[in-house]
Image (cartoon, rainbow, N blue to C red; front, side, top):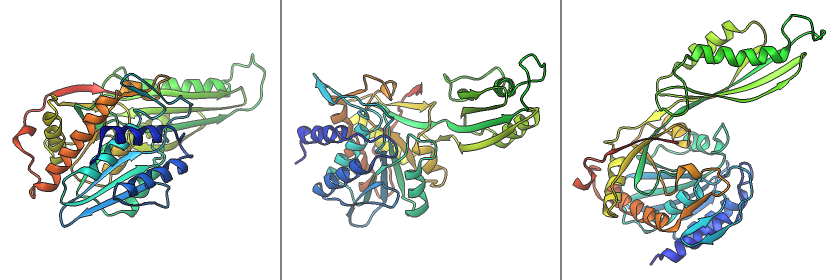
Length: 364
């Protein structure tokens, strides 16, 4: 019998192990050990992902993917009332711990694979890329990120990372010829001009540019740009146009991840809605202006998918990052019921509780 106390103990233990991107090994070992004690066959794969599997006869394969890594920065682990503080409580050790507990306790006919991936907080998502390159495509996919216990995330913006470098001959400051640092600054202005006036991070259907960094002097300069992309955005056209407008220097495409958005009627979304309703919640559908491993995985795996997990996304990376313990425990029950729906309905037709989930708008 799995108790709320033991579920909190699992998350508390995960929070006590620092795991910034690139330093997930200790946490991966801890998670594998916890999985084995819960009945999983578990191991650390070549990428450093913690992978656990439960096989319960014939049936569909559902993969649940969270991530082990966090942004840098120490945050003391502590409990204050029903709040559990710690780096990763929301993003995304809480969602991963909920998946581990739910899959272990779910009445499910088929195969459940739970993964704590490495490197999600980096631009390249090496853990998710390793999964899609080396593992068979699952029948269904749930990605663990903070949606809120009563919400389901249907989509994420994509991401384009660009780097501009330029060098100029040394000259006196009063020479009217443009200096390297000036050209780097003008490259940012050109990017904004090409994207047009309808840009920003407050909407899902418009690009959101960010000047990540700019450094240099009159002789050499470098600037990094990041653009959050709506579905269907024409990346080659943007890069070609910007290169043609730059008077000097080189523009490098560092990384590009397309946006993703799933059908709210797919069986994974519907099963999660059933789970939320079973906990007396009123399901909300969201899209997010950030990017997650859902982008990386669904780019290749064209399967029913959704993102779900406890936590308030506004606390991601925050100095007071914390999760509400009651919401964490509710999310385990939601996932447990959702997996039951997916594993016990041969045609993947969740019960009528799944109908008419209202939309909850854009989040981040």
